[in-house]
Amino acid sequence: MRDYNAIREPVVLWASEHYQIIQNTGSSLSDEGLALARRVRVLEPERIRVLLVDEIPIHNDPLVAGLAKSAGMLDGTIEGMTFGHSIYIVRGCESVRLYSHEFRHVYQYETYGSIPAFMDEYLPQVLTLGYGKAPLELDARAFEIERV
Image (cartoon, rainbow, N blue to C red):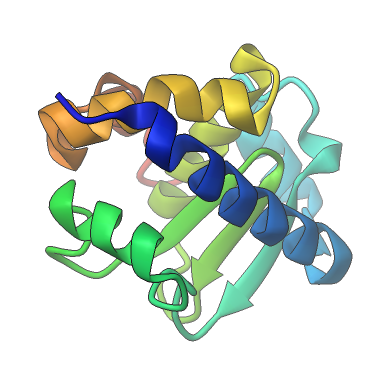
């Protein structure tokens, strides 16, 4: 079992920095986006901001990139990543399925109440069980919507 306390603070700091970047430069949701977020039970969809990027900036931090690789997150292409009400989406990967998945993560953050509280649950799940079997990922997949 990993020492989650040793990695928690750097990961929370990294996630919090990206949360702020997206809040400052991302776009608010369209009416269709707000409706889709509500369908997956997001409580405050008007707070969501989305930033389209060429690549999720996970490789800029060696610790985060290493953790993501060990959890199996880098086995394929990462199309989206959520931090609270802030979401990165890779250009060209936009789909109802991806948005609904990431919106469900927003709901999870709302339920936990903060980035640190979410990470206290998410990190042990993905690092112990792997990205594909983590309960919070399975929940997000269960709420994926293929089309509106």
